[in-house]
Image 1 (cartoon, rainbow, N blue to C red):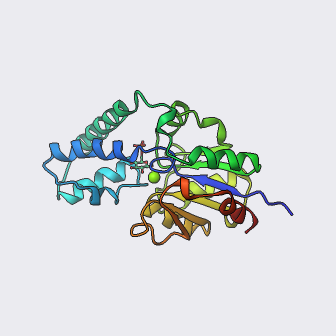
Image 2: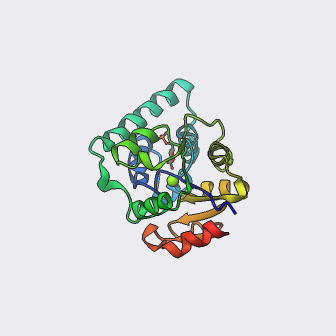
Length: 219
Ligand code: BG6
Ligand code: MG
């Protein structure tokens, strides 16, 4: 029997702790518009595209804006976000991630990225993990944002593996919902209170051991 599964990783907040940089950059935009934007609000933005994130923030402050202004803020946000990534290196890979990537490679599993970010490739390069990925599907490749399952379905398709034989690691509610809609196994990385729709939840990758990976491969 062929036990090859597709293991699909989200990027921000799963492989690297960039969620904090997205938050800081959005907070600057929100502040300049006098919009109160909290850590709690930020959960709504996780896994969500840049354009949609701005709309959510503007909605929080009931701010109506022209397309021209929106385009300006989107550029500002990304420039600010990228400024946090200039010195990024291997040390920013979240604890336990490398161990799991190595394990999956040793076990000859399919490994994919399934991220909403348009900055995914340079981040994977800078942090030295690009070569682990057989397939990369990011914000440049999809038209529908999570919770639409497009990004994960595309990743599984490129790996030539059935969605039912696919496992998604996600830190966002929208991403867990996308994996569930795709009928993939959803593994939440983060808080149980937030990610309760996931099939499995771990605080971080250090809690994921070889036995768990084996059980997913044999499923
Ligand atoms: C997701 C993040 O991975 O990518 C979101 O969770 C972010 O917070 C989205 O807005 C788009 O990222 P980028 O890098 O294209 O602005
Ligand atoms: Mg994420």
